[in-house]
Image 1 (cartoon, helix red, strand yellow):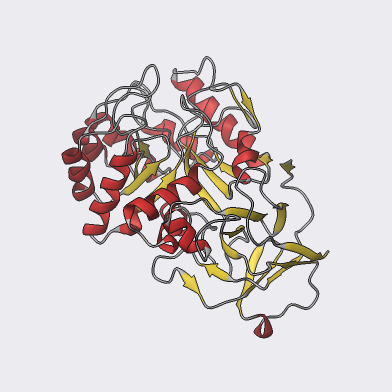
Image 2 (cartoon, rainbow, N blue to C red):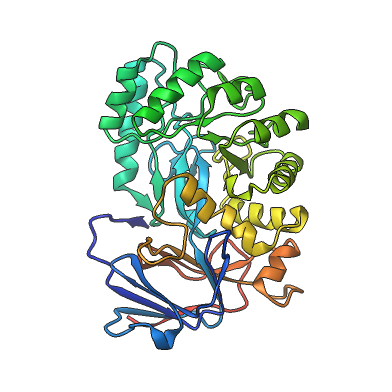
Length: 397
């Protein structure tokens, strides 16, 4: 289903009987609340049902004791056109990710576009076109921030000013194009930052034809806003280089599903030793050679919690509030005024755990029972996750 941005206002949504509310914020990951109210797609009340204004609700959801968390954010995807990817010749991969709880995606470059333009006029045109396309088309309701040009030699400051004035707010992975050296990358990152464009750098070995090794020296000199797939996409740098990057900059440390899991855990341990877990964000780096992963973000949360010895409620922050703050998004946190994007979950049926959080700590995937985007229910029971023990239901509409 495509979400029509021009649709009527969402009205008033009330979700009650929430068994656990995850905030997405590291400083207070669990909220003392059992209900949430949204009006026209934005949160207006969080707390106990008896204390909230629920009059005039146009949609009422009974969570039936399930947990509610901010919608998950995939910080690293490579879209091409609509909900199709030529990388795997697959349709509906974005909608399928929504059934894995993802409500927002960030493009790291439309690099799988067949015949991708590498001249400056062409790459700017491609980025502007992608930005416009996904501003107007939301597969499954998912909000995909796209239009991320891959920088090439010969670009000047005026090119970044032009991109910004056209609405482009992202750079594709530095290193996937012709620019692979620190000095050139640093100069273009500074131009991008000047005009409000956020940058990401490829980290590790080559992933697609035309890309190359980007090691710690290039990463640190470029000083991009996000260290893209620091655990490799797919091939990771040696541990000493990963540690050097973690210690040598204060930028985002992105861990991806399509990377080296051991290196992801090493990065997590290093960030925790530095007391800088707020820098950890999650992506899938799909579609890619290893395919599409509709449950990739949930899998990363489960893996980092169960093998990385992180409380599950903290691991969910990596996929929500951390990314929202790093990427300057208005979603990802349960706060009044934020966008009403939610995922309702519970432990999978027949899990040996006693609760959702315990099941994630044991390495299980949760069952998604409902997804809400912009205050609208976009999916009921997920077609992709294992069935949840408790399922929310719409009781009034």
